[in-house]
Image (cartoon, rainbow, N blue to C red; front, side, top):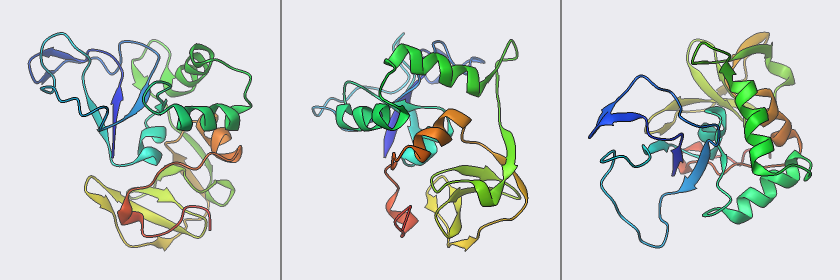
Length: 183
């Protein structure tokens, strides 16, 4: 449903390099912007990343784009508290997602019962949490609802993104979720 940008990550046409990011402004963009089309991963343009839905993009550390998704960006900023500009949010998000000097991404452990709908977790597989269930994640969509896990789980959604969910931001979900996120 969405594309993302972390900079130029490919080293030649359609060949990914080792870099996980080239800048701190990880954004989540619409797939259809003014009917523009371009070849993927060619030349020295940004490398297109693709996300099943916005909850997956948030778990990967991407915030809404202020250009092509202005209304979502404004709602995200409001849920954050409304006082920060994009570069300030990007710095906080980057500090929460990247392991300093390691070029790896962080995750953290939390009790599953304390996590909000919209968070991504990993147990035996990756799940999106809804109010009452855990939806198994797959590249083509979500599987049938499972009971929410109990105890500590590995959380893929960073603490600042969890705070944005707590602040009332509702990410767009893939149709396979077959359930409203919070009701």
